[in-house]
Amino acid sequence: MLRFTVDMDSTHDIYLEPVGSPHRHYLSCALGWIELGMPNDALAELQNIPESLQNHPEVMMARWEIHAKLLQWEEALELARSIVQILPSDSESWIKQSFCLHELKRTQEAWDCLFSVHAEFQDSPTVAYNLACYACQLSQYETARFWLNHAKRVGDRRSVLDMAATDPDLFPMRDSLATL
Image (cartoon, rainbow, N blue to C red; front, side):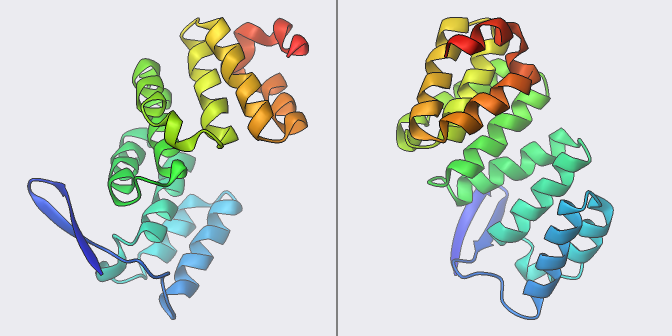
């Protein structure tokens, strides 16, 4: 177990091992409820996990998913920031943090946040795709095209193009997506 400081007032435990039995069962159930679109039931499952494991990254990620499903972006952002501190080398933590900022209509901050770590995650199609979305929303269309092309190079080209075709964040570029 490691200890880390999220802010000057609190210290939390980090667990490097997966959540074990019997608590794994509650976490698995919570993830199932999330997948079924039932975030309140997922939250009830997480409440069965002891306080000593509530700061485990897997539990925090599940809680983030719940807040995202409930469109509770401030709460999700707080969790995402904590997850970034725990797992700074995990692209998913940065993606979650920037996504919250974007949903809170703080798209420039979302861009700045994710762009600041893009070199570390240059092989992540999701990082590149999200940068394209944020650039597009900031009316930086050439930059958005660059990042969409990068996402196609490092990810599955067809998946990226299919997702882009229906993504509301890329709507301003919809007519030019066919030329990518």
